[in-house]
Image (cartoon, rainbow, N blue to C red; front, side, top):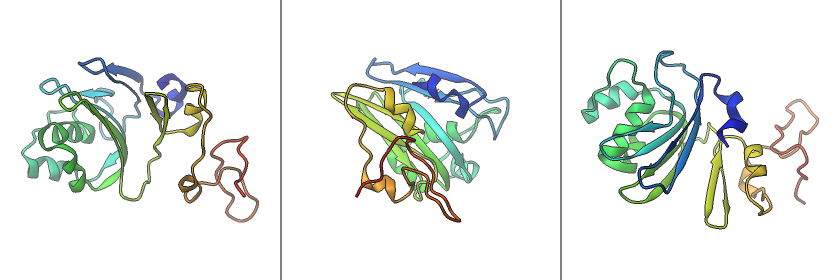
Length: 182
């Protein structure tokens, strides 16, 4: 699925499998904070925690200091999120100021965690098909995943319009062939 969104990260598309074999994360990287940084997904070797990250954490240096997390040269806000999750878990999200969507797989708990910033500025769509969960930053990526029909939930309509609307502020199309619900 990462390849279908390669345009979202021109600095590389990578995949990583969790140490327990229960999850695979893909990430398209756009290097902004440090052009020399390693592309994700990111792995904490000590815990096996795996992170796919989209966005920017504005206060990552301050939080690294506050949480006692050392960042080496070439490590970015994503590395802070990874280490903070490995150290203190999901409550680390409370201290982050930024715009982001992320996926963290923690093999210690056998759980995948999806999250967005408080305002939902970065997109995050998910689809459950049988016992498999797929997620992406573009809903169109999920249209080719699994046999179950794609369902456009009402809460998506509050943020994005499924079809372009005429007027001074035309809506953004979520799905080109989608119909507006009655």
